[in-house]
Image (cartoon, rainbow, N blue to C red; front, side):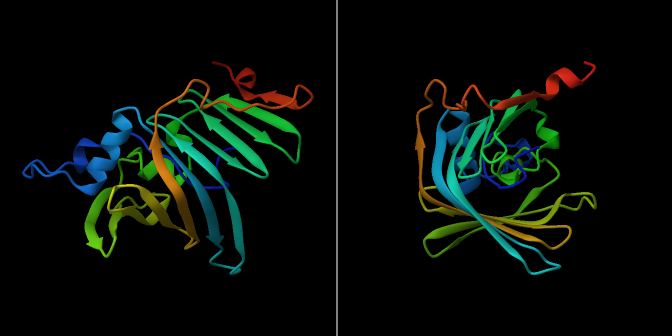
Length: 209
């Protein structure tokens, strides 16, 4: 199990995104600089998915914390914590915890792929100010890219407000952030707590490493 059920998170700036000829930083550069300095993005989120084939809609809400190489998501049904090396998923309904090695390339958690700049197959198509927001559009020419459209909305103070993606099957995924702010990192911020009675499945022990 991965963090596929929702989308959010933020990390390092990408050299290919930095215009060499311009000295003024872009909104995306200012955003990634916050993570490079060790700040943590905290917000409440609403995650909505629209299935392109059936038209069915699903919705989840919760809270998120995002750092340069880690993130944590809490919702009513699940808690997910990634510390950069290990992923832990606590499923409340199934009363179990799954622990596995974390590989950023296998993570389909959209925020961690785009706000952090993890997925280098995407480039910035445009960054424009519209009213009280900045709209950043990412696109990819890679035919195997997971998403064909990615739009990031930031406030004028460079706080993430919305992430909108469309995957290759035309499913639309929108994550809206509220009460977003950058805070100092605290010990244990990217861990999760669960009762001793839960079933722990350690996938690291099932691999021949």
